[in-house]
Length: 139
Image (cartoon, rainbow, N blue to C red):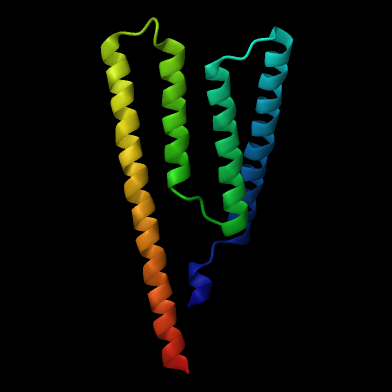
């Protein structure tokens, strides 16, 4: 029965290969941006947000290689950071209602990240209880 639940090896290898490509290209993009900052002798807040996004993507790829799953909260945090970067980049020229909408989107994403982290915590607690019950039944 366990054989039916496993993915075909080509799917697993393709997934790992694509994530490796994403990780490598993220490092290249980060390196090019840092190089551009050095050449321009100028670092802005938006640049730091972009580097943080790169760092989160690398963290997400690393988390997948360690646990074979991507925590749902990581993409949410990346989206929040990207929205913060948008606010910083466009705040001078943007319609105030657009800024309010972007801030609202960040608030909704923050709530979603909190809910998902609580769900993960509850799932881990349930698994521990289940394993504890399983271990006492087998002894």
